[in-house]
Structures are given as C-alpha cells and as structure tokens.
Length: 217
Image (cartoon, rainbow, N blue to C red; front, top):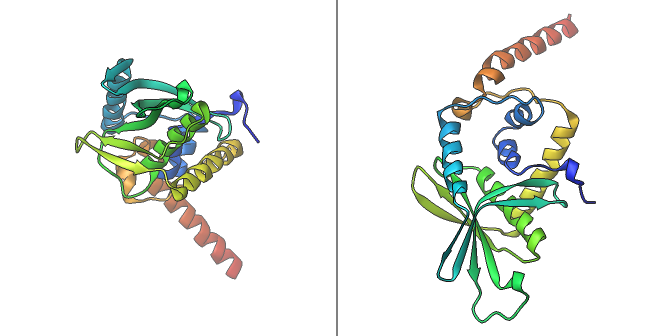
C-alpha cells in the first residue's frame, strides 16, 4: 500500500522518533518546538549546506538540498547533499549512469544508537524509489569531529528504517504523546522545559503508588 501526498511525514522525524518517541510526538503531534544552542547550530549548518545549489568536481556531480519523497514509506524531505558519481563506461539509461551517494550533515559527533543512520538510510530509500537505482552506501558528516563516516545500507538497517517509518505513522495517527522517561540524553533536548520528564515521571510514580495502595486496602 502506498501513501498519498497528504499522508507524507518529514524524513527528519525518523531521527526524532529513534532519539525519543515523546520528543517526536511533542514536535509532530503537539507542534511544540524550542530552539537551544544545539538545534541552532544544527539549523545554521543545514542552511549553509543548502545555500549552494549544484557543483561538479571531475566525475562527481553534487546536488545540495535535493527534494526527496517516498510514497511507499510515506516520507518527504530534503537531502543535505547527494553526490552523483559517474559510473565508468556506463551505457545504461541516463538516470543510471550516475551512482547516488547521500551525505547527511550533523552538528555533533557520532551517536551510540542508529538514529542518524536510519535518517540517512531513509534518504537512500527515497532516492532508490525516485531514481530506480540501488544505493549501497552513504555517509554522515559530523561538525564536531569534521569527519565523514561511511554507512552501509545493509538489510538490517533497511529493515530498521522501514520499521521506523511504520512506527512514525502509527504514532502520528494515534495523536497520543507518550509518557516521559528521564534519561541522560534529556539534558541536550531543546524540549526539556516543555517535556518536564522528571516532574511528570514523579507524578506517574505517585499515581501508581496510590492506585496500588488503594487496591491492597
């Protein structure tokens, strides 16, 4: 089943979902957004990347801010950078003469989880659907380390990405914001003051305690 244009959700929401489902719902269900130093630096980095339009460097053509869409996954967005590498001695159709290689820019450093990789893989899946080609890999560029890290779009990552897209649609369609779970990564979240993880978590703990006590009495 394919989604319609009206059903499409932001590609960037995949990263929000895997970082924190509550953050994802606050942004995409409740339309809450606060900018902090981290998000401001990230926004500025993306704006600078998207300012350019197109470059050519030898056998590499570079597109900036390339629009992406997948009706199969129900996703829409932009790729920071897509490098098109010319294939040697290619005589195929024009769209197949160039090998796409998506590059996503991040302000920080590599994360322990797969949230950035899933967002990048989502871009690759969009490109594959749009261009009718297979994309085996891409890269993440981190502003803090000033290094690129190659990412293989293997079966496991593709499955995780497709599963995340389904979960994202289910979360948005539910219209429900999950309860908070306070973790160390809450410190860097721009929605900390809107989320109030410690406060709400305590309220739920007290509620559960009182409910349990009443059932025992």
